[in-house]
Length: 214
Ligand code: CDP
Ligand code: CDP
Image (tube, rainbow, N blue to C red; front, side, top):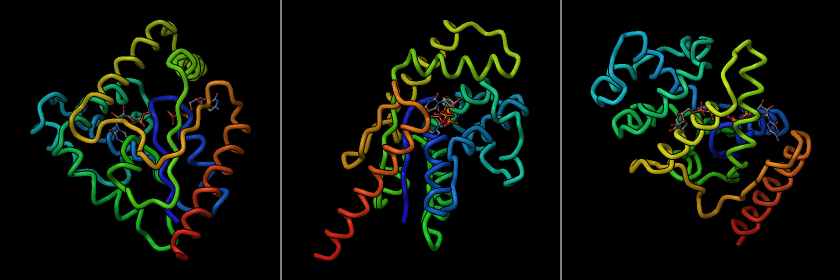
């Protein structure tokens, strides 16, 4: 069983995808980390994220880098959204994600293009969303908890800029797959969002089984 979870920054997709993986006993891959790893390499090497060849040169990395806390910084997230627009960077990370998705027993992946590009044949697809203001408040609270003094206005501006870049790029833009179920978490607690996510996945899996049975 493959479950694809896509959505914009701080929509709650990671929280939901991780909990779904636990619920269904499946391995989980946060694909944003792969783009963040490329970004971290670009920043460390002093390369230019806007130059495709520079970003591609930074796309070769070992799995150990995925555990580096530097990947979690806002700087890495912002740079990730710049390097991720390059088609050759996306191509460099494609097989790794497909292999994970198609491993025996299935998997849960979250990102921007899981339901559209990485696993268009997924058994269940969720598109998680929330208003920009609510997403900014969530990200702001996380940053404050980690000691940052960044303003809410700055976080909101960054979220809007990242949304725009992710939605308007020509390669694998952030968009809901036509067969994805939308889950708006704006006014849902984490518990309520997860309950709804499980209902939506169970329904999609049941419908697919009925279709496959003819
Ligand atoms: O993975 P993504 O960037 O989409 O978001 P996340 O890391 O799952 O969630 C961002 C923040 O929003 C976390 O601090 C969550 O605890 C919080 N959240 C929330 O307040 N309400 C929800 N329904 C989902 C997440
Ligand atoms: O956690 P958050 O939603 O803030 O970001 P993330 O999922 O770690 O992704 C960081 C950036 O990587 C995004 O803004 C996208 O530009 C890019 N990304 C992508 O293009 N495709 C994916 N499947 C996952 C992330």
